[in-house]
Length: 212
Image (cartoon, rainbow, N blue to C red; front, top):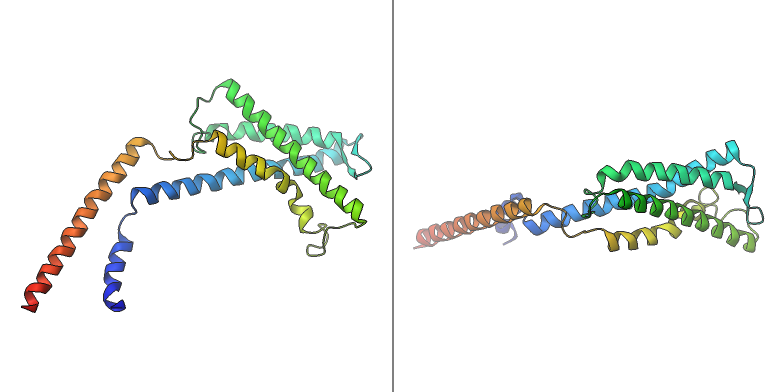
């Protein structure tokens, strides 16, 4: 029975995916892109804060918690994240945003990105505070020279939940395909279903006649 089912399985797998599969794949791709974009906000903020702090750092942000961080680094992170957010505006519809891309909407998006970068800085400081209380320099020894895994993901741990909630609240995740493309995909798959069933019935009838 397994060998006999293999041709049918091959035919089924070779058929074009149905509309629900198309929608699921599109939604997954969009969600993955949104996740990378949100993570990039944290990475851009972290990188810009490091270089701007080294170049212009004069005023300590939290000397008792993390002496290396400066306000100038934070300002550099804000500027870099604002520019990054502006660069993402042309891709708003691809990310699932269905509202009009107006100046207030763009301003709100940039402010949100800057706030998300600020949350990532707070997450970084909180992890440094935990290490201070524990009396250790690094959070682990798995990544030598990087302070441990927690040092690499502390900002992400603080920022990503907020980014996920914002994505659920403001992005229309269910309609990643235009309605005309969705209707066309459904019609094509219904036609293929009818043709596939007709083929199966014809083969069954031929086998029944041969058996007689």
